Length: 111
Image (cartoon, rainbow, N blue to C red; front, side):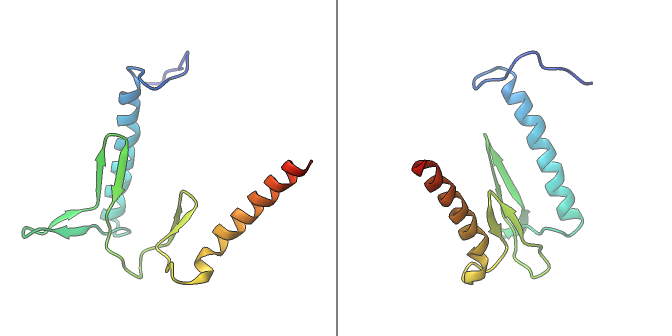
C-alpha cells in the first residue's frame, strides 16, 4: 500500500517509531541475506556457540563480524571499514577530503 505524506515528521511524532521499525526491518533482512550468501560472518558467543551478527536497540545498530580476507572493504560514514588502519594509504581519502573542506572554508572566510 502506498501513501503520500501530507506533512513533515518530527521527533516525538507518533508515526516515527513505526517508520523506524520499517527501515530497521529492511536492514535486518539485508544483514541476514549477507550472512546466508556468506558475504558476512558474525561471531560465536558463549558455550552454546550462538552466532551474533548484529544488535539493534532503539535507534542504534551494531554489527559484529569475524574478519576474513574474503570480506570486501567498504565505507561507512566516510570512514574505511575492513582496511588496515596502520597503513598511511588507508587514511589518504580522509585526509584529502579534510584538505578540500578546509580549503573551501578558508576561501569563504577570506572573501
